[in-house]
Length: 546
Image (cartoon, rainbow, N blue to C red; front, side):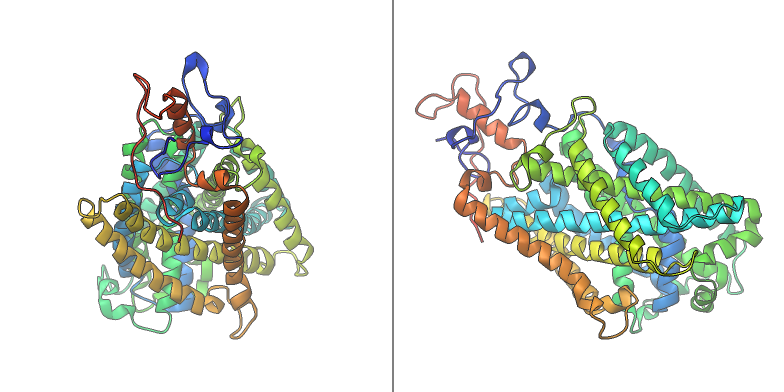
């Protein structure tokens, strides 16, 4: 019997486990034929970094999340919050990046969790990841449609309901999502570079023309973090970081996953922490730290544009509006690509229909996974459209409901996944007998897990504030319950697979490694001894179910 790095039997020894073994030239590339593999070597460090940073939508965070945090939570110390959370995310990345060297799977979060905590928990995590990233992606269509409709009305006197550009955005995103990832990376990269350049320009302008208190460092005083809104502000700030953890999703498509993925994660965390801390500080500098909360309350999401107009002129502000929209689109596309790859990974491993686990021959992209997310997006946008009874130009449905609800439900799921993944990292290396060698990384993962659980607790208890619902509103538990429901469905599905299809259950989290086990099995002798020249599989202890 041949076992792999998690101690499970190879698919060649299970009923129905044998697939098409040989690729071109006799090489082995996937565990069920060429169409089961994402195309390798498509994206390098620059392309991957731009792709994951695009998901964080810098301009949307600066103009939307930061201003809202000042406005609603009244936390003047928001810049210090980004520094603190940057440290937490760096601690999380230490173990998460090390896992990326050992496990290359488009189902990153759930694959890591499966390898550490067992296939059933991994199945639960897979459905949480699918629901969370899908909610994040679909929610963005609300603000995208509203902003595009507003731009067309303001500059071209063309009057469209928000859902018209939203639906067009769904179709365009779906089309791009089915294309080669390197093409997507180029689109995302161009939009991101322009977006960041614009933020740098107005940051410099704010520093050059500060408010009445000058270049004050008051926002970095720990005393500024006091107040009832701290927990909610933490959740908003964590949402601004979402994106960097997506790097392992593209591991199978990078040229050197052992180094590229880890490098990109640390670069992304460092960039987001420093860039957002400086930008949020300079917003306070432009108004004056003592006036930033009042200014945000008066101007709302238009604060950045109100601050740039007198300093940089109306033309720059109009350009900023335009690239605010393209930045939203870049974020939409980035999340769409992630959802498509999670669906692909789950289809490949039997957690979803097998058809989703195949890639397009022309592009090597998970085309059916992309199509699935496009259909879901269409249904959700149409559903919110039918329920929209407000007048034209009313942001209630597209922004305050679709965008806010989707964004916060998705962020809640990602925080839960990050905390669980941190625990899984510890379990993974302890079971491999590598606890002593990885002690520093395991301590970092433990600290990250504790910090993330604190943030998760705040997110759940303050969810009514996050979605602007009245105290006691059913929304405060119905929306978080969607993540809980996804977890329950996944756990039950995992248990059923374990009882009825153990070969499929054993494959959860392995991805293409399952095919490598098959390759080793086919090359081994009858007694299980590897044939001459065959690579012997690793001897990681068997994975135990929790």
